[in-house]
Each structure stands twice: as C-alpha cells, then as structure tokens.
Image (tube, rainbow, N blue to C red; front, side, top):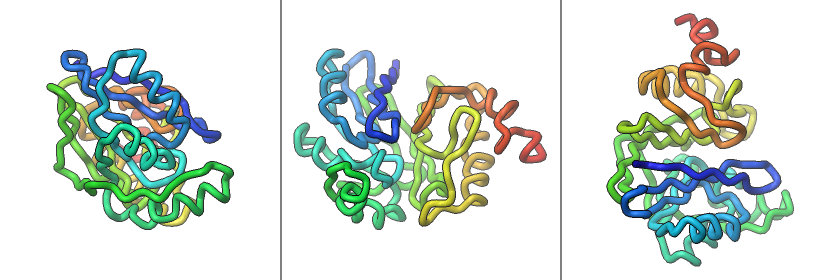
Length: 215
C-alpha cells in the first residue's frame, strides 16, 4: 500500500508529504519547503528509506529546502514541469525576502504529463496542472485513488492565481479537465490545509463545484 505522512513546514504552513510503500519502506519526500530536520526525523522514526524528492511547483514554501535535503540524502530531485524553472532559479532571492534561507534548485529531471514515479512497489502518475504556477504538476496513485495536488485545489478553495505566472482560467481548466476525470472517490492531499475528497469539493467548493462549473 501507498501511505502518506504529512508535516506542516515553513511560516506558510505548507503540507510537505512523505509518501511511502508499506511493503518496502521506500519513500519520496514531496515539496520539502523547509524545516528539513522535521522531515528527516519523521523518515527515521518510521524506518523509511528516502529514494527521491518530488516537487509539485517552484514556490519557496514548496521547494525552498529541496536542494539542501537532496544533498543530505544523496537523492535526486524530480519535478516540477520546466515551466517553473524561473521560480526555482529565484529561490535564494525569495528566501532573502521572506527571511527563509534557501538555495536555488536545479532538478535532476523535469516532469511531464504521462511520466511515472516508482516508489517501492507503488506508482505515482504525473499530470500537468498549470494555473497556480505555469509548471505545476500533481501526482496520482490510481490503485488507491490518492492524489497529491500541491496548490491546485484545497479543501473548500483553490490555489492563488494572482502571483506572477498565475492564471485563473488555466487553474479552473486543470481542476475540471485533469482532476475531476480521475474520479469522485479520490482522496487528495493539498499543499495547505486539511485533506478532502474530490466528491466533497465537487459538491461544496464554491470555486469548482459542479454548480460553479455548470456541470
């Protein structure tokens, strides 16, 4: 089984997820924006074996600790889509602005829709979901109907689109045409706030409910 452990990190209370295969204990650390000592402790306390760092997008609260953590663990960074390169190239500058010491990030591999990430015996599928940022991606495990959606969708809300590179129409299209077709029974882990299901958001989310989208 694929299991997910969530730790809130940085002053922005971002959900960094540690996704692991219960059979092999191999794990991926998703969006390590900061507080990497906490993420390392969770991995160690659960006897997990970090194999890769995954990024949904390039904002500092999601990617600010990626380079340092990759150096400590000697693992590769995969993602996001190359359209977020300009954000990862500015992490050090962003960190100085927000008082969050960070290093610029150069992923070992950019990810595209259709790519797959193997974690032990489990697979995460990659979907391109721009809108919050131009290169945003999400990760989906079809077997267990679980999705790590970064800042595309929240419990009761959606990601901001007023930041540089954001686009409201693109974000709505990503939810409607990429997330919803995955199934109403999907449980999702957002970049901020509590987990939810696509069904709940289809019924109640004021931005992307079926009524709001005219479905």
